[in-house]
Image (cartoon, rainbow, N blue to C red; front, side, top):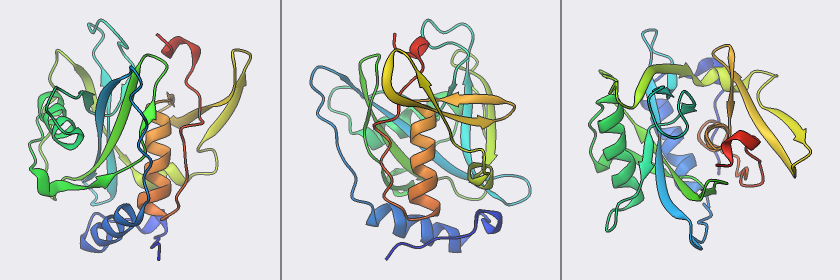
Length: 214
């Protein structure tokens, strides 16, 4: 049975951890065939803010990066040969934001999301623990943000828009006075649905904006 909490009541505590763990483990995730795509992993990090609210971690990519500069992103990157997706997500999280956690921090996996730029992204849900120090790697990360999960349940989240280049709806999350786009938006939206509400909502049909197709 799926468990759910009112987002306004989401504190970063053991009750929330047990609910998140139960919901992720009950989720029947879908793996995507690689089919010439490159495997990648991202960390959906659950962590507290100064008020003790349950949050997720979002970064703004550095302007100096060769691809996807200045875009909103979850910590993550390519899966190295012989490396599992969870290990890759934990490694990238440590390299990008200085958060070092072990395998026991992994609560579970969400659906794979194939991208227009040639990757299959595996999202890994990670529990950070209470005392978290984040240090951005300036070569990769311009800024780090803790977004309360309650922000994801506002009426305007998500937005779905149509574009002439695709029959699939483009998903957007209005957060931080900006718009978060897929693949990050799709992964975060599914995290909301699964982790908070225990709903098996699929997101691989959501489109990316055209400028993210490269």
